[in-house]
Length: 198
Image (cartoon, rainbow, N blue to C red; front, side, top):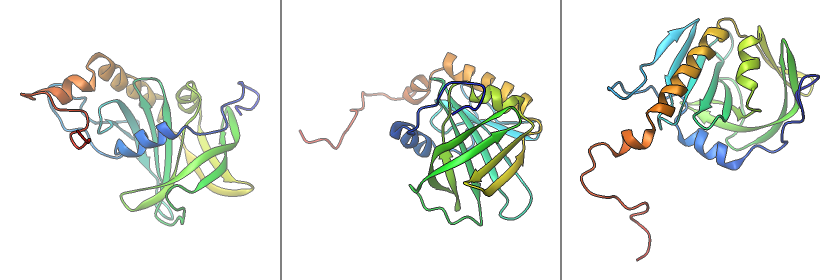
C-alpha cells in the first residue's frame, strides 16, 4: 500500500508481468539501428531499450558489498518493474517474498516480490502502481527491508533526469512499435507456433 499517499496496490504480482520481465532480458543493451533507441548515460544511470523493444529501463550499480544493481523498467503499456540484485544474496529464482520499500516521499509495506537471477546476480523483481516512476524520480533514496532486516539502502541521485529520459525512450517505441522492427526483412509469413500439432 502506498502509505499516506495513495490507494491500496494489488497484493499479487501478476504472472504475465514476470514472464515478460524475465523474458525481456532486463539487462540487454539495445542493438543500434535506424529504428532503435540508442542507449545513453543520464545522471549516473544507463538508459536503454529492453531486448524485446516493448519498453525501456534505467539501471545503475552501487559500490559496496555485492555491488548492488538497481533497475527500473517501464513498458509501452504503462506497466513498470523494479529489479534489485546483489552478488552476495541467496535468493532463489521464483522465491516469493514480502518486502517493505521506503522512498523519501512514502512507501509500500509487505509488497510482493519474486526471486530472480540475471547474469549470475541474484535478487528480486516486483511491480508497482502506474505512478511509481514519478515517485521514484522525485525521491532521494530507496530503502528496502525484509521485515525489520535491512536489504539495501540506495541513493536515487540523478533519477529525476534518468526517468525523464526513460519516458522519452518509451515514447520512441510507442511511435515505432516493436512488431514493425521484428517483421522487417521477413520474406514469408511465419506461423505463430511452427511446432504446433497439425
